Length: 152
Image 1: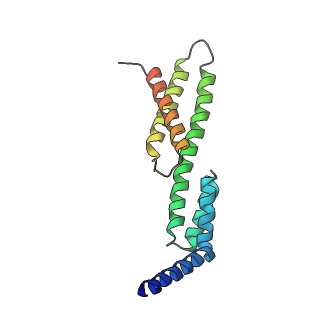
Image 2 (image 1 turned 90 degrees about the vertical axis):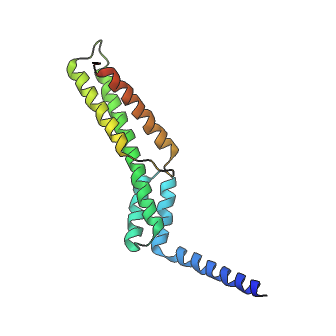
Image 3 (image 1 turned 180 degrees about the vertical axis):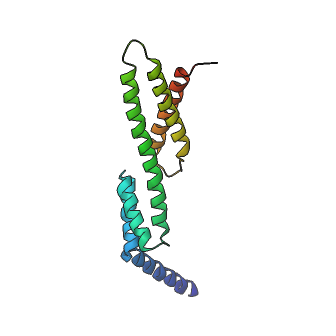
């Protein structure tokens, strides 16, 4: 008999907790941020998570979504910059030979991308595709850097 009473109390507390989370505007925004995060809308997810965190600084979901969105945006920015630099490098390499000035630019771009990759940190919850794409570009820039840097 005591077990049934305890079980009922647990269910009531669980229902009250769920209702309070659903009706709390901070948690509503956090859930919305989580949705946008998982659909790849990292900027919108970060904005919503910041709003939720501003409403309730104890909202751990909002804090987590802010961090995850920021790291994902770092990866997206890295990938976009890598694509832009690769386009510029391809334009410089279209001719028969590459000038010393172009080699210096390519070397600098590679250094920037290699250092930028080191600064972004992956976590287990970041989208695997983002991590793999960033790693691929990093490896390509590292290999290109070794080609344009004279060996001693």
